Every structure is written in structure tokens, then in C-alpha cells.
Length: 200
Image (cartoon, rainbow, N blue to C red):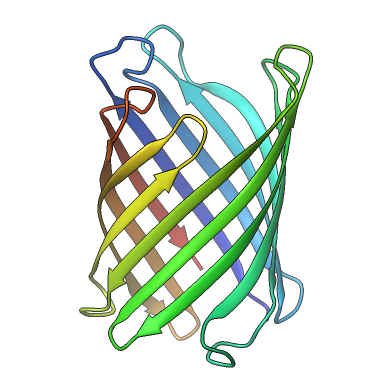
């Protein structure tokens, strides 16, 4: 309850294929909780490539619903609802994900299983599914190594990530993440570098 956060995410793709190489996505967001179970976040999404400079590409609204209390069942459960609109193509995307988290001693495993519906004038209206999994080891509060997997229509990637929390006051913290995932097929960029900074 009463949580507020500012967040910045950056993703940079590197690939031998010019159509996938050099693409950068930047997400800037503000989020706040409405109760001890509901949290909403609004994103501005920017994109730039080797040919085009940075510009706002999309807007996204997300709402998370915590279904269970932490430790209440064998795993912690939640739902994520999101809607995104693309400025360039007038496309809309609607998504729902089931969120799961399970602690195994010092290990924490999370999995997000999602269904997305895309529609728009310039794209085929279609359903997609997504899966993201993370296994992280709670070494210290400030440094936790992890392994992540991402799967979807045009994505199959696996790689290491490092993250942690830095206390900045009695009721505030800075969360950071940095990592690289490697493409497992030809549709996925060879390397995707990602960074995440969040003030809560």
C-alpha cells in the first residue's frame, strides 16, 4: 500500500542481421498502488534505430493484481493486465499474464505466462502467447545473480542477469538490473542487452 515508483528500462539489440541490429527501446514509467493488492503503471516507450533517431513509439498502461498473500500457498500468484497503443502504426495490443513466484530457500523462481491480442490497420489481427522465466539466487540484498528465459512468437532467448536493491532511506529504495540474453533461433537477435533502474 502507498507505493510509488519511477522506472527506466533500456534494451539494445545486437545482431549480424541489419534488420535486427542496433534497435534500442527505452521505457520510462510512473506507477502507484491503489491498495495493498492493486498497482498501476503508465509507460512512455521510445525507439531508435541506426536509421532513425529516438522518438515516442507507444504508450502502455499496466495493472497488477496480487491474488494471494506472500507465503500463503505453495507459490505466490498474481495477474497482469496491459494495453498498448503504437503511434506509428495505429496498432493496439491487449495482454493478460498469470504471474507466479516460488521461493526455494535462497532461490526464487518466477514465471509469467501471457496471452496477447494484437489488432490494427497495418498488422494482421492475431493472438500470441509469451513465457518469461527467471531463477535468481539471493546472495545479498544488493547483488543477486539470475538466469532468464524469454519465449514468444518472435523471441527465444536465454541469458544471465544481475540485480539488487540499494536502500536510499527509511521508506525508499533503488532497484537495478543489468544483463544480456542470447538468441536461440534466427528470429531473435543474437544478443539483447537490457538495463533497468527503478526508484521506489
